[in-house]
Amino acid sequence: MKDGIHPNYREVLFHDVSNDFKFVTRSTIQTRETITHEGKEYPLVKIEVSSESHPFYTGQHKIVDTAGRVDKFRKKFGTVGSKTAIANQ
Image 1 (cartoon, rainbow, N blue to C red):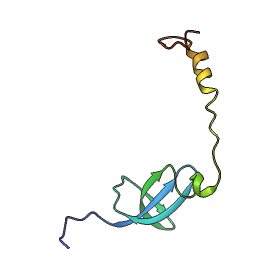
Image 2: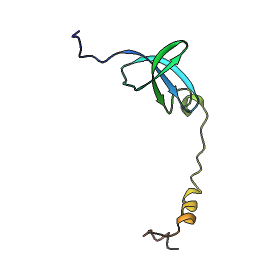
Image 3: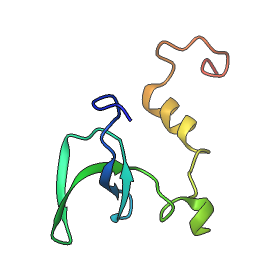
Image 4: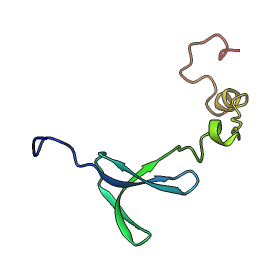
């Protein structure tokens, strides 16, 4: 292999911020933050979803209330700037 053309492949700590799950794996991802984990310093990558928090793997689905959001928005802002027929009712 040629020197200086390959990215730095090293151990990186990934932190799932949704449930505070951390795991170490090897990666070439560039990071700005570092963290000490089990006595060793690792580059830190914060992620939103991992296998520990994804509904497919956990079997727990988060129910999002979408039914009342439009009504709540219309009550808050009324018909200001709206050009739809529904808003004019």
